[in-house]
Length: 49
Length: 413
Image (cartoon, rainbow over all chains, first blue to last red; front, side, top):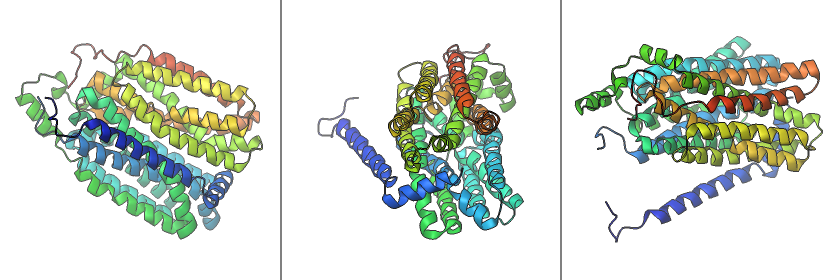
């Protein structure tokens, strides 16, 4: 069944979803590089050995 | 025609993804608790490591039994049990004041909680409700959510420990685990009603009349299933060895501690992307070729890493490449099991394959340490991981994903 012309195409939503996911990933990635966290995390990893 | 009892795809993906995000994420930062716990309790590292090893083995060993329960009664009550076990295990981890209690809570209870709330259980529901045309993609979305959980929870766990203290941080994680309960409602189904409907609609799949014992016997005598299981052992070996021993390897080569953190972040980031891509590709190409390519590429990446001088840049490139190949084996492996053996016993059979992954993980961690002690370097283990990767690639090539066990037609429903 084809989509009625007045309904929004699925494609923009798909790109919005990809964009949202990329933004979320970038946000979490940046969390690793907050100065406090990076040293805390590094020292915890290092102190395991 | 679509089965009326099937759950909506969006609901399945949203709830399944959130369940796996929580269950895979919570456990991923456990290494960060090593120092605070052993310092406060005055225990050896061995006590902590033993509990973690038990946890991984319990997770793997309990999987097929939990999977049998989920295949029979649906994921709902299994996820309930998982939430309670996981939550109690985390609170027990905070309160245990002897190594034995610590092993029982962190090792046994959390391991059981994981078995009840990770891939095998969720994939069973996806298998029953998602058409084969979208199954690998749907498994890719869910596995990518698990990868995202791991990526997210490392910094979150570190922040929780820094701001609340290690015990309170575990209480918070325990409350996160209880969020699995409302999410379980979104995955609530009745496998027996679905089978009855399929029978009424005269879909004559031989698997509909198969008992769990028959399914198990059939799988264990099916060469392709056994080859797949062997390949997954290697996956566990490589990931556990790299995950546990890479920071130590970098430290031995006098790299700055922040290089290890950067590597961790890159593995986490590329893991999410790689897992999703592998699931999506599984919808278009032969999944066994994808698996074989992943194992080959892992070996190539490891060879390049071993043979080039170790610098922050080479570590970064290695972490990004390995990250993209990290959990990317999960969607194609489970999708092949569903395609070959059907979905009626998917949670049990998927969990059995995963058990071999966990034994591989155990061997990767243990042999990594043992061979390091014997030889004074990680070189032997790196080359062992390379060789095993090529072996896994070879094992997956003859797997016939389009061929059902002898005596019945391929199950596509």
